[in-house]
Image 1: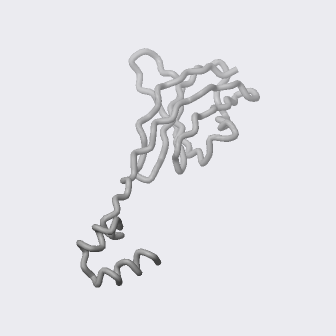
Image 2: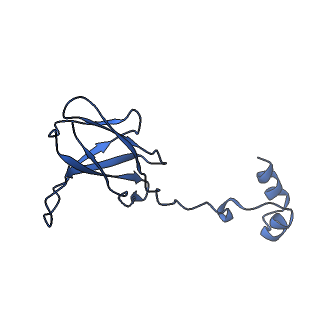
Image 3: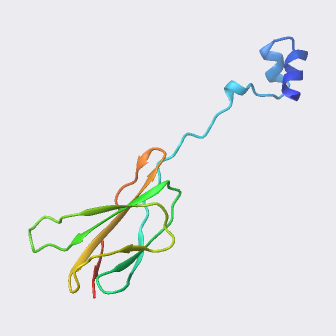
Length: 127
């Protein structure tokens, strides 16, 4: 309200308005949106048989994607399964895994400007 009064007192002269120490609303700089940081997998705990509990590092994100797949034989392509994770707490349960199999996990965050890069891969064997 005070700025409006000053603007009226300046009789519409932008030079007088600015020289009085005020900044026109249209000239204010907003910090542009920044890409979301890449999260990491903090730990993977054994859950019940055929289940792992994945703890994801929280970043300023709207949601996360967790992908996982069994470690393939040498030279084979990894088959990923991707799930959406709305929150990092509690740990994310990954079910229906084959006991005795080692799985690779990666996570990425989704923010205002899209997805982050995938995290470093973490491997864990299911019991």
